[in-house]
Length: 282
Image 1 (tube, rainbow, N blue to C red):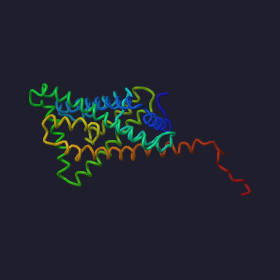
Image 2 (cartoon, one colour):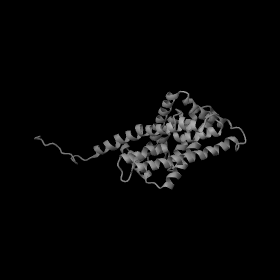
Image 3 (cartoon, rainbow, N blue to C red):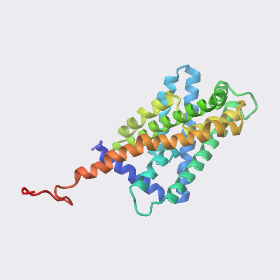
């Protein structure tokens, strides 16, 4: 069967979160490193498409190819594990602790960052002929994105920070929907379609994704964008990270768990199991 009922695929999500908590350090880091590198390359691909065609929708429609590749290869993004691993904790899986979840988050975050930074450096070499020339049109476009999505928020102060946080929440609402939605199918085409839809929405709406930004903003600095590392951290990466966590958990993980795991178990309980049925005389 190529389709799983919601109660079944959400249970698979909890199982996946449990397995990630107990994964070896080496495996966790390698999978996170490759996820960050592939997603960064997909972001460079999408920006290149936007720059050469002038059609942002085309870039948004094709960006999910990177997300699909990394998911099918079993690699991990921070935006995914920050939804999956807490579900195993909430479900009280044996041995799953707050410390174990925090360890997984830290390894995946730094693995994603290392992978994205590696791709950023390689693409900077491509865009500048080994730093021998000015950045090409795509490199300059990336530099502009870096400025617009840091200094552009900063100029609005608290309102800019709120906007950034909300855009990050909405981003991981969509991205984590793709992560868990891929579990509803047992076929590769089914998984890809389930991932493609919400990822296209997030990218076209230019929501803020912490791992994509691990590529865009270091790249912008390398391409000569007028922003600093502190601008990037304070006016994008840190608020985006927090927004991604809140949005993914609040709108995807907890919602699906509360309605498909908790109530699903209640509905499937056999009549009379643990329940005292009233007698006619009562």
